[in-house]
Image 1 (cartoon, rainbow, N blue to C red):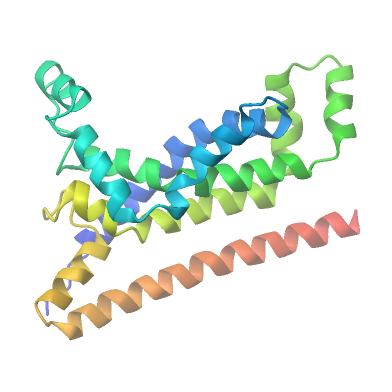
Image 2 (image 1 turned 180 degrees about the vertical axis):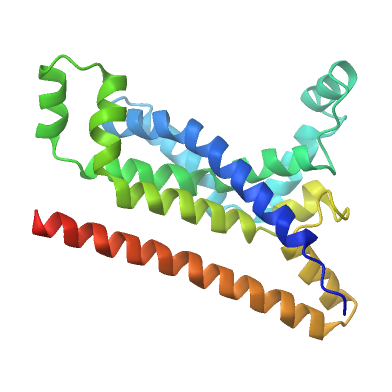
Length: 226
């Protein structure tokens, strides 16, 4: 077998873009949810957590329909912007953002909620705005949660299968990520190649999780020494 790195490179590219986009979106929302007492807070939390409990095929089907030319959104983007959102990399990014959103949001929100209220109140008393408090006070004090959110989101996106398959299909160099490549090897009864690709994915997942635990362990020890 001639090993092809392209599916892994595509997976890492997708995961990197999705992690950056979700961080920019989830950060202000997580901060607001952690500080808000709004009656709409449980509704937003439930909506944001739905990708965790929904079958990937269900989410993939609705995303596929929403991005296709059969929907107003898909038709508008394709007709007026000339961009097709299904069975290409753009569709993968959108679908992956929706599917991985709670994995970025929840660790950040939990981190903000774990901060002592006195730290936040002291920042406001010093005249800092909510935005300044978020960036200069809250964010530096939730490094373990921040690390967990980014790394778990990245790893979860790399390992996606159902949503990616439905929205992107299997186009070499465009949407054929590592998980899809493994699926195709199994379909072709090429178990040797499937073993090699799967072993690489297992190793990557282990290394990623190990780095998170080591980082969080060190941060806890630093906090204890202080």
